[in-house]
Image 1 (cartoon, protein in one colour):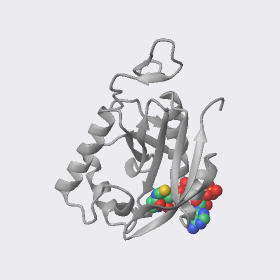
Image 2 (cartoon, rainbow, N blue to C red; image 1 turned 180 degrees about the vertical axis):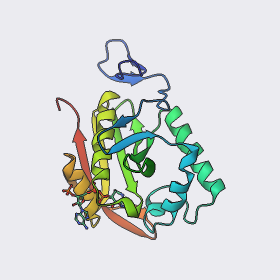
Image 3 (cartoon, rainbow, N blue to C red; image 1 turned 90 degrees about the vertical axis):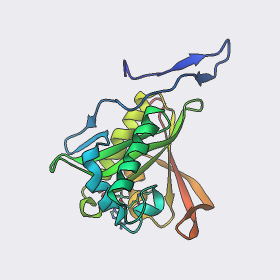
Image 4 (tube, protein in one colour; image 1 turned 135 degrees about the horizontal axis):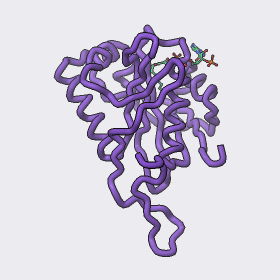
Length: 203
Ligand SMILES: CC(C)(COP(=O)(O)OP(=O)(O)OC[C@H]1O[C@@H](n2cnc3c(N)ncnc32)[C@H](O)[C@@H]1OP(=O)(O)O)[C@@H](O)C(=O)NCCC(=O)NCCS
């Protein structure tokens, strides 16, 4: 990643607008960790984590993991994550609980817009690993990564009644910007979503 800043950035003429002209390969970024939590690229050995996540009632509704995921579908999902990272469209990372040495969830920077320098963060944990602070640590680490990638704004869209996820946003310094009514179809219903965001300048 070199110094980790400005991958593929050019300035066009006298324009002050930064325009990304090259594909940014995010596939081989170094791992990030704190005492308990480690973020790394997904590996084929993480397939059991994906299959377990598919059994959660909510995770398949907010991700592209199919419910009742087969091994073949799980492997296809992993390949899609690797492609997304290689093409610089997103940064999907496994959350590893260092106390067990296994992938127990996911944190991702989605919809990366290199021109406007923003991305959306998404995350989930296997139910048996919730409530230990792993999501909060993972979001802190991925925001640090976003800063190193020279992104300016990270957004999180959270359902109005998802208190656990809103607590993660607040604990990691995101600001609530407002509610987007009937914004996302999740399952069979269109949901109101709270827009949280963190602007990374001067922080
Ligand atoms: C959202 C999710 C990742 C949070 O995981 P977690 O293990 O609870 O996260 P953490 O342990 O880091 O704790 C997050 C905070 O939620 C709080 N919390 C947990 N359950 C809560 C509840 N029912 N109501 C309010 N706050 C709650 C915790 O106290 C903690 O706050 P604190 O840091 O101020 O103490 C997890 O619930 C999950 O995977 N949910 C399903 C997928 C999902 O909703 N993803 C987010 C989509 S926007």
